[in-house]
Length: 252
Length: 252
DNA sequence: CGCCGGTTTGACCCGCGTCAAGTTGGGTGG
DNA sequence: CCACCCAACTTGACGCGGGTCAAACCGGCG
Image (cartoon, rainbow over all chains, first blue to last red; front, side):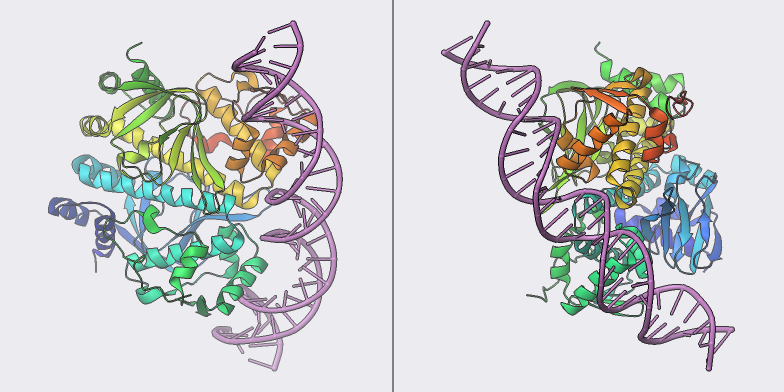
């Protein structure tokens, strides 16, 4: 288990890019440090200059910023396998904060190490670059949602996105997944208030679209939720098709 | 003027990264094709598979998507010097459209050429990667705005951002710049309606913050506009300081 | 058993959307 | 040089989605 972080990393890059054995070999030799972080703690804070980036091995994390009046906007959620601050490789000073949503296990790699790996193995560099581009594609999707979709649609979209991303790492078999996010956190990501998120979720529950028991989320009617959220997983750009569009439509 | 595109490209990369003479040399040798595009025409459409990317030499362009009900969300505006679809280098299928806002002059470079340049000159690869990361940083900024700021703040923020980016390429000396965007386009970028944008702009004019004569935009009170829009140019990550924070405050 | 973070509910309000009707000004053709 | 057109901009009246405020409620934990 000493190479846990490296293996998570390789699995992820295999999902989006085309690595060969030498690339994987080189990745396996990356020096990493593993750390556990408590829920709610900032891993990196806005304005900080960083010298390393990290792979999320276990748990949930998010990135966020505050407005002048103290409102929080969550910019991204991260699930195991993600490399949440890869951008720091080139943009050393953080323009937002990065925190553990739940207790998380994180693998750290120095920028130096990543950088020399990129020089030695252009394939890996390409894969990492692509990874940051997918990050950007998700941002674009959120911009469209925040700008032009209703609260209900946005909520549906986020639930679909998380289901899909969790599924891609084997954490959401048949539309059931652990979603350890408070409604407050969902609201701050969706540009809504807790009250509204609560009402939307109840509405979904009432309509038989999903069930939620504590942090266990069950999507009962995937195709309808997809329609409401205008969700098309293409923007996540998985090379391997995580085949979710093809799911037998349950609903009316 | 045969190397117009290349020189625009070099000037841009010099603005954000640290190139040496060999890098510039190699960039100058990039084979490019120049094309003029009429206002309103799609340069690349959603779903299209592309084999080249482009540098905006002159004019304004934007990227956008439509929702199911046909509402448009503009994801980004681009000014001369930008490389609007650099992400296509790794994500070949467009997940959004890219259009000319005004008549524009554009230089095209094949992905192949860019890719071999990246292999040969890691410095350039790094600069281009950084360029895509700045694109992402701008997205994050817009997410925070769309999610948590008022229409008024968002509008102010966008005007500041455009002023800053135009200034960085010498197109907005002393807070005056050509802004050939209709209020409809502004609205679609800001997640608002034309009516609201119109009222916000009039309010700004009334408060003496700006003047607008046709497409000529004059920011009369930079510091106040910056405050209203919660604008901090750091996220644009210019290496060279385009020194705009330091502008003598005009206003109350 | 009582605290506490998270959730739920209700009443009320406001920013912004919607609809609809002008107005303005540059471009075009007669 | 005028008449007309059309896209962009304005203005007003009205309504709704979602925010705000405030008060429970619920379940896990010390």
